[in-house]
View 1: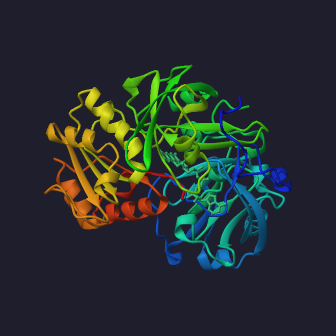
View 2: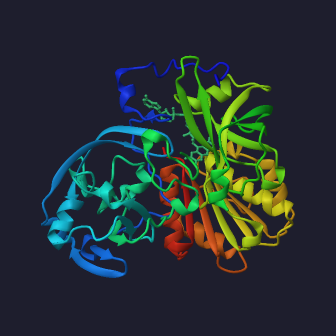
View 3: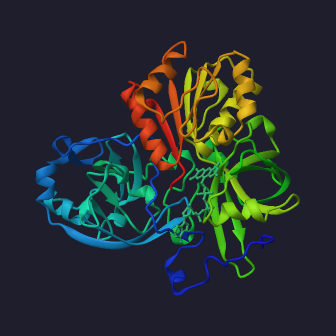
Length: 203
Length: 248
Ligand SMILES: Cc1cc2nc3c(=O)[nH]c(=O)nc-3n(C[C@H](O)[C@H](O)[C@H](O)COP(=O)(O)OP(=O)(O)OC[C@H]3O[C@@H](n4cnc5c(N)ncnc54)[C@H](O)[C@@H]3O)c2cc1C
């Protein structure tokens, strides 16, 4: 339905359109969204635990985690509130490298990302592997600020950004695909921006 | 509940039935829904504009009206000068126009009279909009839940819903309004003239008969960061604080 009096004057179609998923607009800034206050975490108190169900498989402190191989990833990111940001540059530890350090292959097909503030979000294990996702430690070469999830956040750039959990402190393999915080509150269980999987019931 | 409501919220067209200027920069648009829904106070809708060449812009807007206003919803939209969607509403949209929207959305930043209280609401600028839905819902449901609203605006004339809020405050029925102006002296004895800080949050919680069971903070990102930190510094447990950030 065409909206009377609305024109695309400000956003003429460009070559970039192929990079912008449906319903998204290009954002130059980096908006912040979260469900609660920003946790202020000291790296001395930070840890990351890999779990299979309730059972811890391996736990790293900040120093140990930073000794894992660092990988660069520059990606476009897409927030369900409709902004897309091009070429965000991150460095962190690939989930592949975390599993390698723990000496395991994924024990189940699903995961829940766990955060210090109690936030959770579910991601199928295959979406985290083969270089598709990392635990990011740096944004544009600098430590990630608390507002953006520092000291460490998940980065799954091919899914809507609520899947890239901030203030990450663990990854849990689960037997079933268990909805996390927003998935229990009306957001899509998977969240593919290219298929516009924003809310429960979207295709 | 929220899962079901999202699943049942495809795009619909809604007709603008009334436009009301609230402040120099904020105008309310009343939409008659073609597929009426009942929202929860605090929820938002997504609005989608489509150009003749197919280009679309979508943005989220909180619902200002109470759930009891079923069938018609009010959105209070602040005009951002270089923005894309908010200037369209202020400069182009007219009564009778049909706009596509989808909702109700969001299942976290919500309050119902049956949740009880006391609750503390903290809004900055247009961040008062979802809080207004909660305040109106409380009134319409004749809820006795104690509610304190701390509302920060730059100047007296930018206090959105000012007369309505002061009218509700004057009823002394457990709703308490605290205005704070950041660029003008306070106009009422109980109000402030500074940015929100921990001392103000301590005094706001003291206006409630008991510590709040929930606090809702909404506004720009900078506002929400500062206000949520002030609440934490005022010993409101982080786990009780819910935030909604308008992004910029
Ligand atoms: C859940 C939720 C609820 C919301 N509820 C409300 C509400 O009740 N009321 C309300 O008024 N808003 C609300 N918002 C904010 C709203 O969704 C929009 O973000 C807001 O209206 C701005 O949209 P816009 O298209 O006018 O501006 P945009 O085009 O998105 O621009 C936003 C800002 O970026 C700047 N900008 C844009 N493009 C450029 C550029 N190319 N270069 C430099 N700067 C640029 C503009 O100056 C502007 O200040 C809500 C947001 C969320 C997420």
